[in-house]
Image (cartoon, rainbow, N blue to C red; front, side, top):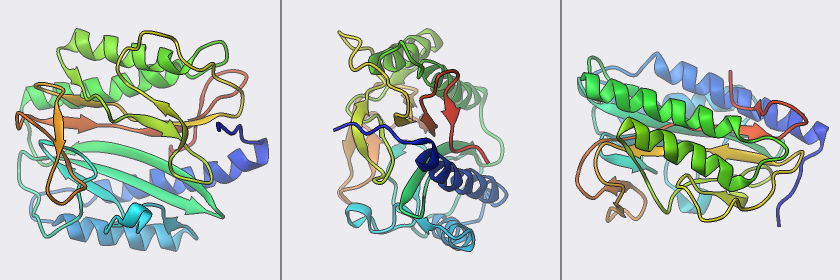
Length: 248
């Protein structure tokens, strides 16, 4: 069942979301060659807890990390490890925080040192696709209007959109109804209602859209080994513009 949050509940989610945004800002300072994913995970854990929140992903469905950290061809749900960031890598940081039982969820993909122009285009296109999807989250529109905006833009830019993994409702639980696909659908789907809170998180690939799950049972990877990027914000549907909850 889809829940619509009250104004007070959205205020609490905004608090959680601000902490998520600030955590990503803090992590960005440390993304450089030589640091390990596990070190970034510890920095995120310490910062989130210092802000009177708890890491939303830790032990969620038995996930072993505090945030998800994915490299290069890894799409999402990478487990923090001793893997070292190297010049030319891209790394996706997916962060969740819980404040008084309410959740925020956002992600960003960052370059490690210098990257190629193609990588820069991938990162820019994925972020823009997310923003275009967010712009559709308004009264009078439907869930699948978000998908259409993302898919159409990605296709124009020459990138594929990962299928089977998309956005979701968010609130008391990190993952709530409705599911939010990022590929164009045959129908417009569910009508958006005031107070609905959604996480919009397109994942764009340089190559094919096909992905698989690694033996660790968590990390999603492109089947062709080509690069993937992931950007995400949580938002609330209002009477006007969508309210992005996870900006710092």
